[in-house]
Length: 243
Ligand code: DX5
Ligand code: ZN
Image 1: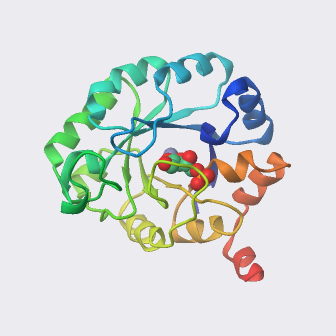
Image 2: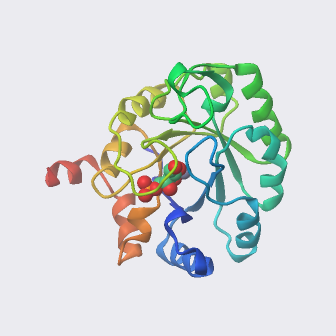
């Protein structure tokens, strides 16, 4: 079983003192920082851009992953690479045939029927050409439709367990079979993102995820060291004891 890693999303941090948020992350033993980048087009919310990564980069050695919830992510790869992100994750929904109900401005959540492999591969290559690790994310309503050709180019895959846009939402259990299915064919890191807490982490790990993203559970905890420990040691046994 791979080591379980915890990735703290600063989306739930107090943005008036991000350096304090970083200290909290470092002191509590999280493995990386998850940067939720939102453009108000791919998702119904706007967060922040590469400038925040740029200013935080010199303040910590923790790896940073940029979760790009933006349209046309290919336009911004260099910018995020320059800012200091170590992993750049783009969304499958930006590279495929959208389902009819979400095809158009202001229609969410974005979900695809199929992937345009050539366009996606070219952006994955772009990410690698700037020396960064490449990730691909799937929204809850999109099938895990990456072929072997795509899978072998990726360092990690994110299975969204909420519709992207906001922290603090409830975990969608539909993510679990998707994670299990993916774990059978993908040896790289599987990140699960959305609604992770002491109750949902065991299920996600059991299904095969090895990186747990957390915003509200981690930043809402009075004891962040314990919160990270709980997530890292979450097992099926703990889960069934609680139920
Ligand atoms: C949602 C983001 C998530 C979010 C997680 O669009 O991609 O990373 O910040 O927040 P919690 O852990 O509160 O569900
Ligand atoms: Zn995220």
